Image (cartoon, rainbow, N blue to C red; front, side, top):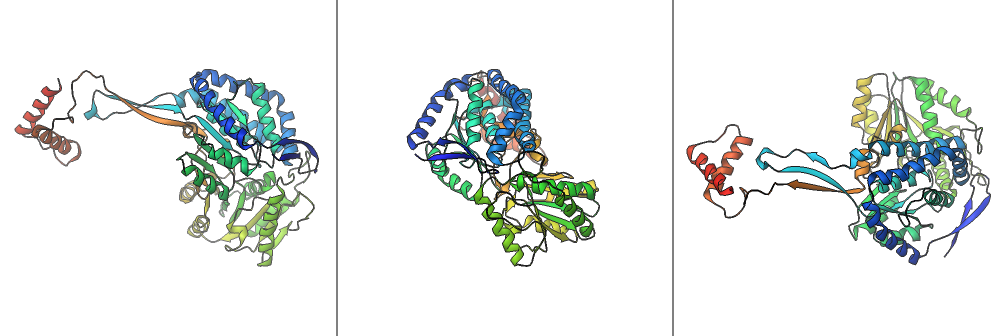
Length: 509
């Protein structure tokens, strides 16, 4: 078994280590979680929510301390860690406390008149053991929120946190111990891709993965061998569209934050900025001015922290170099020190659609800007991407903004705002195309961690049904008459049909 170092990417400090789980430990963890499922799924929803409330209280009381630990693991500034990891998690817990009962209660649905006196409803049943494989960019909330969703729904959970930020996995493990969750309801398995692969092959009842497209495809292929349901939250190349009638000051502020928050290591980062040609010069001036004013450092008194993954720096460098070599211009930034985890926020102009910076996910503090001339052109440019996670449309014209938003091939769209889709727990979140499969958050997201069982209930007082054996000519006449009555242009009623219906009614008694 290998050992993972706990390293602060911003300072290089090594502050501990953790041993990777062995294949036997992975298998044993899944077996224990499966045994714990029986009791946990039988625990009342109210009791499960009490554990979440205890966690929320702890987050509130110790939020600043926890944010500092997350900063230490990721290199992000402490305020960002607090806002995007602690606050969002507490808000999600509160959402479940208020609404989970309604979302998981049996849902009555209409039953057609021809099926009277039957009643129909949907029952939401826990799935079993849910494997959550989480990323390093938001290692706390992108692990714990799907975990909480699975737990509220009555499942047990195995978490495999990213090997890039293992200390956050230890932190999550500690939190669930503090709130006194029953044994084996939550297990954290530390390690890299081998541990993740073993977890998938251990056949959990659902897999929730957040990470790269390439890894997501491998997980889906492996899960398909055993028809394990998967939910994939993958990459993005998110566009921002600024029309000439937008509030330019607001749009510029949104672009700078949307591109550089968390050093651009956000699946919903603004990675393609399309500006109407009429306001391009003024908009470029504004975003350049605001970008140059950003402070970079760690862990406080700054807006932009360090990168988290050394491997990601190589990808960002390759994208910038490719663009500059093909004729793009770095208005700000552009230079990358090979010995530093801090990348200067970079604005690129003169970019073209075939450059890597416009086609592939960069996942770093880089903002490429291009112009467009009309609505149809920008919709076509945006939709050409293989990704479709989030997008934003900026315009004072409400009708136009809504029209464009609804034409974009994207799982989530913001109007006159950026990235904020995820912050509303009532909304489902997920992507289309290469950005993923499935939705979480919102009612659909919680129910996605259950089997939706459709139940139809007959009083059971009649000895048979219209459609049961033995088949008779009367049944043919009756169904023909009903078909014309319910779905045709005019009823087809005659004396033989009415007599046939009467005889069939008598047979039901």
